[in-house]
Amino acid sequence: MIECALGEGSNFGPDCLVERAETDGKRLLIVRHPTGGFRRFEQTDDGRGMAEVDGADTSIRRIDGEMLELTVAEDRYRFPVRLRGVQSRGMDGSAE
Image 1 (spheres, rainbow, N blue to C red):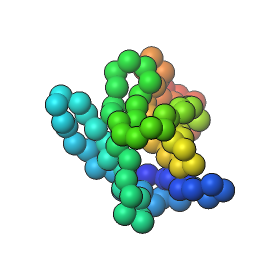
Image 2 (image 1 turned 90 degrees about the vertical axis):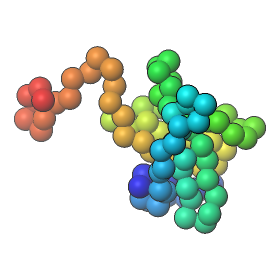
Image 3 (image 1 turned 180 degrees about the vertical axis):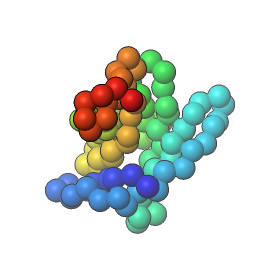
């Protein structure tokens, strides 16, 4: 499950189920909405993290701490990320 905010003015909640799939050599994440809708994203290795697969709407990406927030039309999704070249730090500031 990931946090998502579906529709204009909605708040984030842990409401979207994520499934992994591979099609034609592409690594996909299928995000299922609690209402039955879904969006598909391709996991990329080009620095974007993920890209939309279907539809006319493009995604807007931003990093917020250790989360990648994707906005597509009026829907928003938060995915945990591990940034390349950034060492994770523990609560006391020591490297993990």
